[in-house]
Amino acid sequence: MNFALILLIALVVTGFIWLLDIFYFKKQRSADAKEPLLIEYAKSFFPVILIVFFLRSFLVEPFRIPSGSMIPSLKVGDFILVNKYTWGIRLPVANIKVKDINQPQRGDVMVFRYPVDPSLDYIKRVVGLPGDKIEYTADKHLRINGQPVPMEYEHDYDYTKAGLNSVNAKLYREQLGTHRHEILIQPDDPPVRAEQVRPFQDRANCDYNDRGFICVVPPNHYFMMGDNRDDSTDSRYWGFVPDDHIVGKAFFVWMNFSDFGRIGTTID
Image 1 (cartoon, one colour):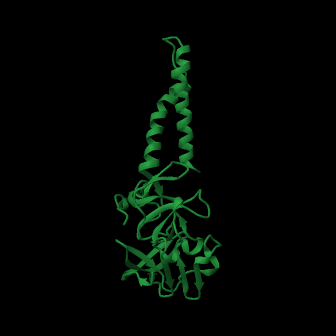
Image 2 (image 1 turned 90 degrees about the vertical axis):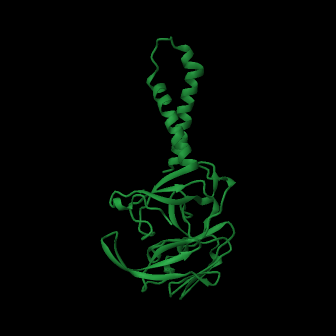
Image 3 (image 1 turned 60 degrees about the horizontal axis):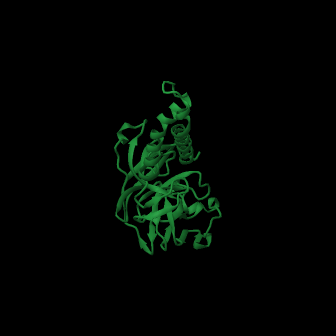
């Protein structure tokens, strides 16, 4: 469901009814006549819809985390806020950038339109910038442009995923750009499951082999990975994220009805 489009339609319809009343219907009514219910509702809802549309389109937008691909940074059920203007101003609905402000950096947590189905929003961490060579092999150590990304083992981490399956993982602290964040690794899992890799645009930029993969990020694209490295369907499987698919930068957890302690958590 394209909520932005629904808001835009509601804004246009209520605004049109209000203007029609100002320039036509109001002149046809007697001074003591009551406003028709439709016009009354349009005049009441228009300013509210306008404010919501403006805030959601240009400032912040709420999202809910539906899966565990970003554990431990983000938990299932987290309601987050996404900054819509950090990386530029985009036209609502069309998502066309009209003004550059900043560029995404390695380590940023990004919400974007899923390249396979742009009607869906995904959230992952930016690992590769345009031109970067991304390498991830059996040792589960991420390398960018030939340099290993610093990471330190912290402790074992157990969690329960959908279906009540218990997962035993190891928690590491990774330094990606200016972001020092936690990731999960399951040492016995492969770095990529080759049988799950889909055909995607610029697939020739990637080399999959028995040890893992190497990908070179094309211009105006980004390589995304989940913090729950072995339980994340990300750029390893469906390719690069184009710049025009960017929605915004995640920065704050404002609610989790299953874990109130998550409220107020900042996203690094």
